[in-house]
Length: 454
Ligand code: MN
Ligand code: MN
Image 1 (spheres, rainbow, N blue to C red):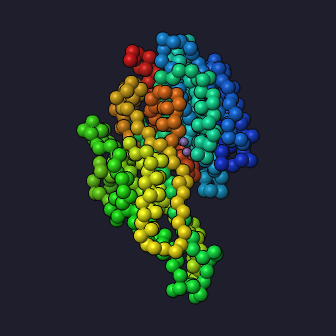
Image 2 (image 1 turned 45 degrees about the vertical axis):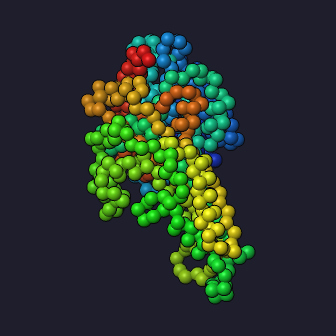
Image 3 (image 1 turned 180 degrees about the horizontal axis):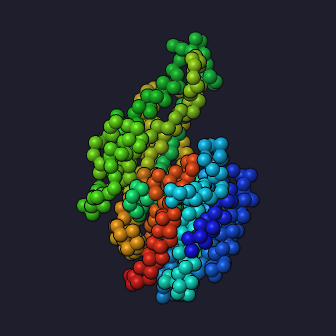
């Protein structure tokens, strides 16, 4: 059986389904067709749905089972992958699956998400072979644009979701364990508001030997405003920013007990001597459950090596805020705009200010008390003999809160690979044990879900 799942994964990895490369669109379509073909061999009713965003890769909608007495679980994954070239520093061809003696499979997408797709497919295939009937009804929702911000996903799902029917739970198979040693389940992700502060002065770039000292420079205004966004301890100074942040409850706090997190390892992994608060739980909370602000860069600034005496005419500061329950990203963008305008007005600058919300995305917060989490944790305990860590992502996955709303069902993220698999890097890998374990956990979890009566 292991040979079959490996062989399936080998074929899937061989498709160079890089969504960011439009010249690979035909290959991505072939990838979707390959998945469709395989799902159909086990009786899934599959439709390739054209992406509502023109030129984007199609989505795969699938259904298996219509028993109204059973729960209906939807699996989400993406079949597109990050770009990869052997010249990037891969030891072997990224699109040829290689099994090495270290017990790992190597190839682009094995962790993210082709391995999880293989685990899901074989979990269901084997359940059908063993029992002929499934413990739950199954739905598939696979996309091919996740590595390119899921373009068109929301529009397409909104338009065609009736194909899927009623959904009771969403299983997101697009993640790794929090650490290499211990399985984990994710129950949350932060939202985001990405902002641009544009300051324009002279009609074009000027020479500091010519205008230096005679005009108010846009960069000076911008740096002044950027310095007003947070203090040196990371506290955001925008008025009202923290008003809707949920306080930590005892139940939530208990989720941080015994997590496999080492502050020392964390600092070593990112190469810093100190974090803002030298405490492991507080650091995890700062990563996952507290909001933050980051200044990413300045467009229009002179940033090359050397000494150019330019006075940039227009500069745009790029800032993002990671947001948490119950902050509303649009409202935060408004608070940001209001605050920056107010600070700018105080400066009596002759320059022009323009603030743009460049993108917003919702946070996600799952309820760990619900039946999917219990069924998932019990399955992990049964297979791996250890209770999983419940973790969150400090990043943003807006399609999860979107799916929860659009499909009216709770979601959970089940990690398959390990954190050091190098999901977006060279020599991406997946431990064979994790591939098989992922498959087994899915089977046990679906059986557990079928026993839930709520
Ligand atoms: Mn992914
Ligand atoms: Mn990815």
